Image 1 (cartoon, rainbow, N blue to C red):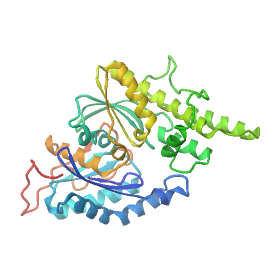
Image 2: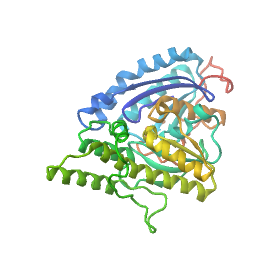
Image 3: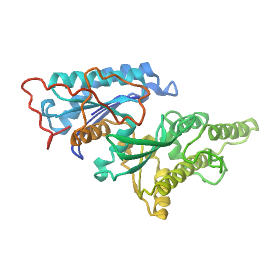
Image 4: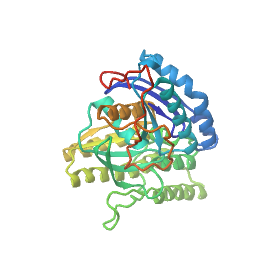
Length: 357
C-alpha cells in the first residue's frame, strides 16, 4: 500500500489483517517554517523518498517485491501533485511485477486500518474521521463498496483549527500534538468557548470549527492588547475541550440514531489523548464499543492503504485500470476506483489467498 496524499510518504505491507511493515518518511520539518504544508515541497519530497521507503518496507516485512499479490495506492482525496507521485510509483511497480493495481480512497483507508488492530470491521461501521483536512461522520455497511457520508465539516477541519490556534499561541507547526501536550497542564473549564453547530436548528451531524477558531484567537488578542498574561495551557485545554465535546457528542448521537453499536475513530486527530478519553467515556455510557487504532496508524500511513487493498482482493473487487488517475477531490462514496481488470503479464500466476498484499 502506497500513501502520498499530503506530507507523509507511507508504504505498508499487509497479509490479510496482519501488518508486516509500516514505513513512513515525513516531510513535515520541511513545511514547518511555512506554518503549513506546501504542495510543491511535498511532491518533491515524495519523489525522493518513494523508492527508499518501499525498499525499507520490503526489508522490514522480510518479503521480496515479487512475493506481493497486489499494489494499492491512495488515488484521492489529497494534494494533486503529491497523489500523482504515489499513483505513478504504484503503476510502475504493479506493471513491472505483473500484479493488479488498486486505486483506493484515503478516507476509506483510514477506517479500514482498524482491521490491523482490532480484526474485521463490524458491518455497518460508524466512523468519525478527524484530520488536518477532514472531519467526517461516515456510515460504512461495506468498506470496499458502500460508504455513506452522514456529516462533514462545513468550513475548517478539526486539525486545521488545531494548527491555527497553535500558530496564534506561537507553539509552532503542526498544532495537534503540541496543543494536546499543553492542554494536559491546563483547565478545560477555564474559558467557555463556543460549540459550533450544536443548536436545535443546526445540521445534526455536520461540524463547524471556524467560529470557534475566531473566538479563541480574539480572546487571546484581547488579553495581549490589555497587556495581560495569556494562560497558554488553559487556552489549549479549553479550546481542545470545545472541539472534542462536539466531535464525540455528534458521533455518539449518530450511532444511537442509526442503531449502530460500534464507533471507529480515525485520522490524525484521533491520536489526541482527550478525544480518546472523552469518546471512551461517552461510548461506555451509551453502550457503544469504541475502536481507535494506535496513534501511529491514525496519522497518514501506507498500512491503511494496504489494509483496504487486501480487503478489495479478499472481496473480489475489480482492480483499477492502467489509466488510473489521481483525483484530489475523490468522493468518500467511492472507496476505490475500479476499471477493467488488467491482464496478468505472462509468467505471473495470481493466487488470491494466503499471500501478501
